[in-house]
Length: 126
Image 1 (cartoon, one colour):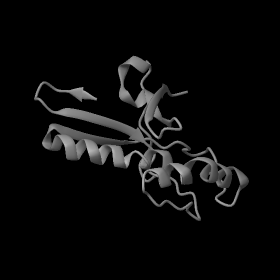
Image 2 (cartoon, helix red, strand yellow):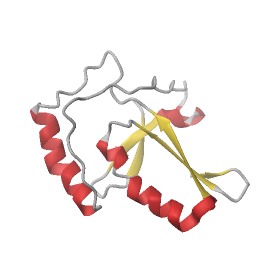
Image 3 (cartoon, one colour):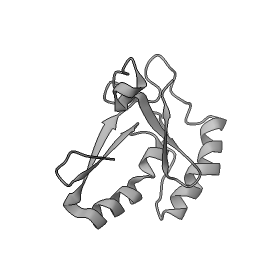
């Protein structure tokens, strides 16, 4: 979160729109917007977790079903949300952000990850 000196807080989120863990942060963001109104600005930045040529995950594969059953569905229920594993794994519409040469030079050097609480944590992109 950053404040450009104008009294408003800016929350910049770098995430993949097909990532359920990124989507599960929406209730927290809605609460921030509700609590702070015009005092908070949410800035979404696209970051494709599996850009070409990295293969998309198989929606019928064991991995996605295991992760959704063990993590996504329970987190969604705890937040009062209903999510369903999509039948396809689409590619992002936007090209991924260019990573800076130094992690200290830009927000694109981080990516969305979550802990079991459903809160964002950040780690350096690899």
